[in-house]
Length: 155
Image (tube, rainbow, N blue to C red; front, side, top):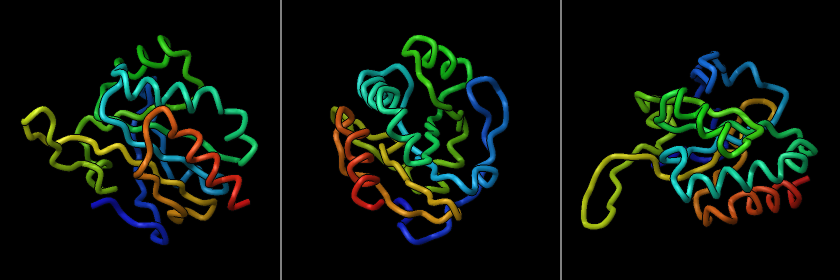
């Protein structure tokens, strides 16, 4: 079960696509959209990332930093960024430790098979490090709009 709004966001440090460490607590003072996705370069994850890429200016206007997290390697993340011309940071959670911290590493069923994986979920973290909102009901093509609608209604 994913963690709920109103709690302090669990802190972490993960390497980005360039193998540079990114620490959540160093982003205090900005809103952070932490979005967890199953795997880079798959159709749904590509659609979701493109939506965020295309609305970056609007997200910037709300002082929102976008961080995508998946169990991919930094090399796969670099390829994803380059192929899709992404304009935000992707983080490698190869051991899925942060996914587990946030409660998004769960048993999933697909085509009659069960396996552990990332349940697509996004967390909006406010400027003081508190989980402001959890987005877990959206289609990949609408994810960016659901986030923007929330930001526009709460500002």
